[in-house]
Structure formats: structure tokens, C-alpha cells
Length: 214
Image (cartoon, rainbow, N blue to C red; front, side, top):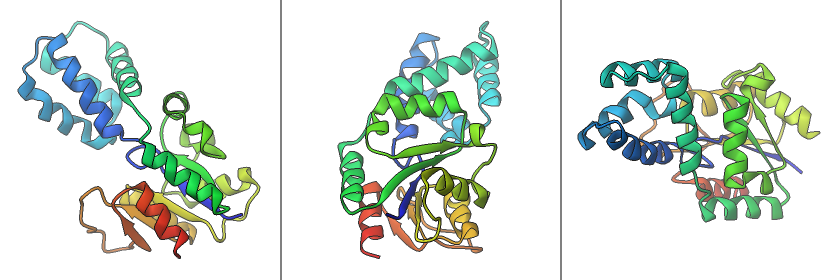
């Protein structure tokens, strides 16, 4: 049974959409104009901004009395509360499992936050397990995190596929690990000249079909 390695944020769950929903609710709470939504989205940088730096930017822009830790907690809790599992993602994982693939999540981030996302959405019912960078001491694109995921799952890394939306972490990591990959484009064009995905898909369901058709 080969491994289907999957990214979490913006692959299995719409983390950017959840952040946007949180931001829409947060801005009126602090008396900020709705027009600041795009500033907040830019500051978040699709989830890749340093979270403490993001909290500091928010505190300084709106002259908040809250501590950086409290602002960071507000962001993290807000994102989790607004996450939902797309039924098509659940369908994709069920299709993969019925085709004798073993779905395993490989994600960067803190263990507490990423596990909370997985359990909140019910993804734990659809995957065989997960590996999180903070707990593993390894981060994508380091190829060792993919090897460790395979070891924990009791499978060989050879024959595995990686599915993810991040060019460097997911596709670059898969390339370094010597496994094929599907890039979830989210409406973007591929622009990295050093490596390329094996396939490109619009969403997780399409990505799974690409793997099964390989």
C-alpha cells in the first residue's frame, strides 16, 4: 500500500479562507475599517508570515493594549474556529483509501495548532496519521521529514506521492526526496525554474485523480 503524503494548510483545509473570515470578524471588534481587510491579508502572507511579527504589526497599527501572546492566541483560535472540511476533500481521501493508498499528512507548524486543525475538521477520521515539523524536529522541504513519515507509517518512501500547494516546501521537498508530486495551483502559474511538479491540479480531489491515474 503506497503512501499518499498530503500538506495540510491550503491543501486539505482552506487556511487562508479561515483567516479571512476571522479577520472580517476581528476588524469591527477593534473599531478598524472593513477596508483594512486586504492589509491584514497581505500582512498574513498566505499564512507564511512569522506569527509573532504579524501580531506585532496588528498591535502597532491599531494601538492595542493586548500582549503579543494574546493577539497570537486570538489569531490561532480564530483560524481553527473558521476551518471546515470540504466534503470534496473527504471524498478524495476516501477514494484514495479505497484504491489502497495510505493518506498521511506532512505539515510544517506547531504541534498544538496543526493537530487542533486536523481534529477540528475531522481529518483524523480520513488519514492514517500525520507528522508535524515542530514535533518531528524536521521541516519541509527537508527530505528527511518525508522519510520519517514513511518510517512511522511502516511503509517505503519509494512509490509515494506528495500533494501540496507550496512550491518550495511541498514540491521542492518532494523533488529532494526523489518522489513525484502534485502541485495544487490555487489559480497560480508555476514560476520556479529549479524544479517542477510531476502534475498540477486545481484542488485536492483533482490531485488524487492525478495520482491514481499515474
